[in-house]
Amino acid sequence: MSTLKTTWHHIRRSPFQSLTAIMVMIFSFLIISVFIIVNSGLSQVLNYFETKPEITLFIKDGLDKTAVDNIQKDLLTYSDIKEIKYISKEKALEIYKQQNKDNPMLTEMVTASILPSSFEITVSNPNTLEQIYQNYATKSDIIDEIIYQKDIINSLLDWTDAIRKTGLVVTIFIGLISFLTIFTIIGMKITNRKEEIRISRLLGASRLYVKKPFLLEGLFYGIFGSLIGSIVSFSFVIIFKQSINSFFQPVEFISGDFSFYGLLLLSEIFLGCFIGLIASWIGVKRYIKF
Image 1 (cartoon, helix red, strand yellow):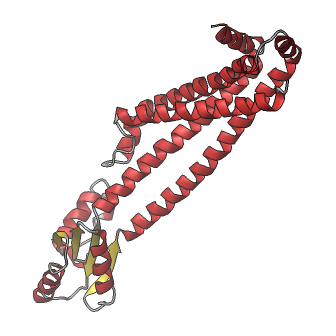
Image 2: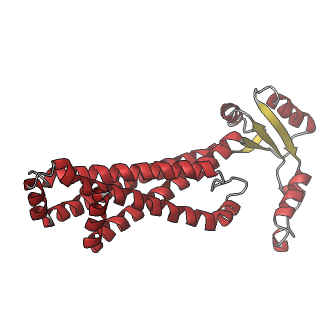
């Protein structure tokens, strides 16, 4: 109990240094939480596009019904086909008018004859999309254009990879800043109490006894900073969850799984404890040599 009182006494005697350490830890774990939640959301978006793969083949004008039927029969020979939907010129016009119903100027001059018919193919295996694309990309006599979600998936992969790498670099950087902040503050406090520590040692106090309050102080900064930082980030998530998920519909960008946030909170507290304890341990080892 005396060790805890001594630790609290150290924190109270230099409030500005203690507040600096706590604020740095709060900011650090706020940023870490945001990156983890954003990465989780991007993974959900990527998973949505990967599990609902689709390719659209726009058919050349002038093909007769037999040629169109032959294309459909050929598409049915591919494996992992979930659905083949034929969109006629008339259906394409109906869809176009529905999409632009709030802007009559865009629909006045548009007729079914100028819109292409198409096949929308959904598969259960993204590799099948690549096969279809490769086979029809060279058939310019029957296919006018191909829209393939591979571009969307590749773009998402690039963005996700870039954000993850950025998040990793930022996490390491702010983790290092947190470590150095606690290390420096603990070192300053030890330096200010050198005489007090020396007297305690002369009176028979063990090294562990004089080191323990500083170790607990670093641990306190880690626990308190990571806890508050996580809670603040989770509060923002709760406030903006509905609007963010509405933007990314039908994907649930912000998870509603409380176990995810519980696990994240425990992981961040553990990381905060590790940073605080290691920084203070190195600090006392560096500055207490008697």
